[in-house]
Structure formats: structure tokens, C-alpha cells
Figure (cartoon, rainbow, N blue to C red):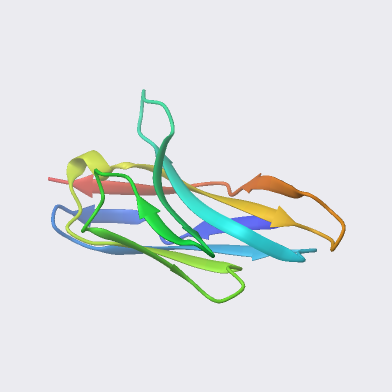
Length: 119
């Protein structure tokens, strides 16, 4: 199983970016996909999550970021609007995946994509 995160880049304050997370490989089902971020010198923090139960967001991004996906959750997007300098970080996607019908759900991580917001 591989998770490929993409879409990062350099954007000015107030701008927008859309990140993508694509899951591939031997996948039976995906229960949830989340985005996390890690700014320089800081711990990795939760950003947003999508599951069959719905979506939830960190308070710091509510109203600015939107997470969405296809039905199978093999492609997940993070639309980021009204970006601020404090959104600068490497963004990682995380997925809870079951590889076979009888298997358990395991966590997988993508490689990260860098978002830089300049003021």
C-alpha cells in the first residue's frame, strides 16, 4: 500500500492550495483518511479527517480548509483557503486501511508535501 501526497507549493497569504492524497496497492477498504502537518521545530498536529461518519477539523483550520474524497476514500483532497503564514508546514496524509476481507485496519502514512505561505 502506498499513499502519495501532492499539491504543495509556495503561496501568498490569503491564497489557496489543494492537496491530494492518493492510495494505491492492495486495498480492501479504507475507514478514514486524515491530514496532519508538521511545522519546523514543532510536533506533528492533526488538521482534518474524513470517515464514513463525516468530517472533523482542527480549530485552527475550521472554516478555511475542506476535506473531501471519492466514495472509496482512495483519493482525498484538502482544499485550503485563506492561507496564513502559520499554515506553513509539511502536510502528511494518513489512512486507516484494511488490505483483505479478514485483515485488520492498519495505519499508513504518505511522504508529505511542503506548503509554504509567504507574507
